[in-house]
Length: 83
Image (cartoon, rainbow, N blue to C red; front, side, top):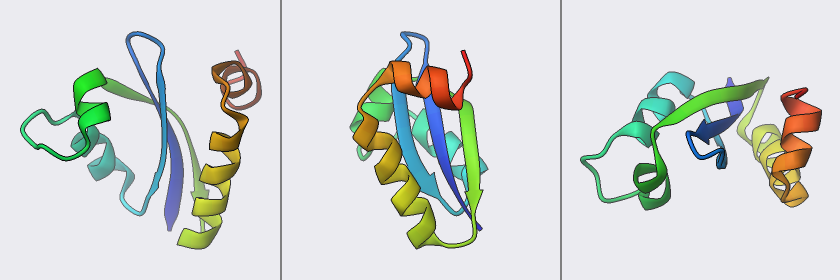
């Protein structure tokens, strides 16, 4: 299984991604000892605010792309987080 997920930091910024291991990926985004993933490590800590399960990677990637194409924190809040 794969997940599309949205993380949010204390400043209200969102990060959208997909993975086949959600728990590990969240821990990875919040680590500060690696060089890779500079955006999430520099702007953390991150909290999981939304996730959606998919049967395969291609489906998860399509959904991630769809959410990213909205380019709007407001859209995320209103449509996915129901705020």
